[in-house]
Structure formats: C-alpha cells, structure tokens
Image (cartoon, rainbow, N blue to C red; front, side):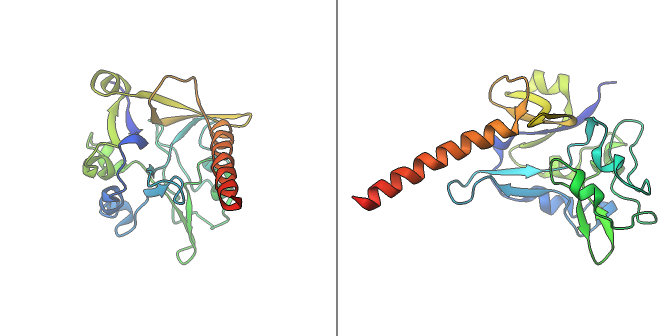
Length: 207
C-alpha cells in the first residue's frame, strides 16, 4: 500500500487560516493548533505558507534523537509523535534540534507539542484535519503516486540547510524540478533582492 503523507504547496496558500481552525478540533490537542500559517516576508509580500511537522526520515527525527527521556516516539509507519506527557521534562532539546522550528514548548503544561499528522485519523485512512479543511488544497494529503497523477508542481522532500540535508516524509511542492530545497541559497537570493530594493529606495530618497 502506498504511503500517504502531506504535500505543502505555498503557491496555493491564501492565508485564510482554515487549517489552524481545523487543527484545533483534533482530539489529541483539542483547542490548540499545531499548524502555523507563516507570512513569508510580511514587509514586502502578502505571501503565506502553512508550517507543519515535516516528520523527518533521514536523519530520523532529530527531535526524537535528542530527547533524553524518549518522550518522542516514532510509529512503525514513520509518523513522529508529539511528546508523551508522562515522560516529557520540558528540557527544550527537541525545540533546538528541529531544523524546521516546529516543536513548541507549552511552558504551563511543561510539555512539547507539535503536529502528529492527526494520527488518530490518518491511522484509520482519514485525512488530517488541516488537509480536510484547506479550501485551495495548499495542504494536500495522499500518496506520491496520487499527487504526480492528479496535481501540478514538483514534490520535493529533501531540504538542505547549508551542508546538512534532511529527507522528510512530508513534501514541499515547488513550481519546477530541483534536486533539493536549498534554504541557504534561497535566503541568500532573498537578501540580494532585498538589498537591491533597499538600494533603489535610498537612491530615490537622496534624489
């Protein structure tokens, strides 16, 4: 059976936050959203992107690897669970280890919380709440084969942070084929564009 997972397509996100509202209905964290809709660059663009746990596969879940009490478990099918409340000691190791900045520490509860792919639903072959609610399918749930057959865009699950590469269960959807999502290169490109815009504005101010 083909593995089903999430596909995140920022080009489809309209910032409506329906995913956040739906996530709050999940039985495992009722009332709290484990999905975040982030503004990519609020000062220069209205573009938004949903951020969920990427469920890292290679290396296997850095958050789980650094947990000193084994509070973060991984299911046999590769879903990285949120911290077990009976084990978590709120040390923040997982928060610092995650390259995507996903785990959040609930200081009051002394517990790390994050997306667990709505495991109570996906283990029963149901869509996660976020994918169920997204009106533009910026968050889409299915198998890789289904995505390639039904959707536009190129799914990529290899992300590079400098020399470190992370292969994830969850895919980002890009407009064109690239071997990996190179975060450092994208940041450098964005900074160059920002510097150019800033330079033009400064010249206009001088004139």
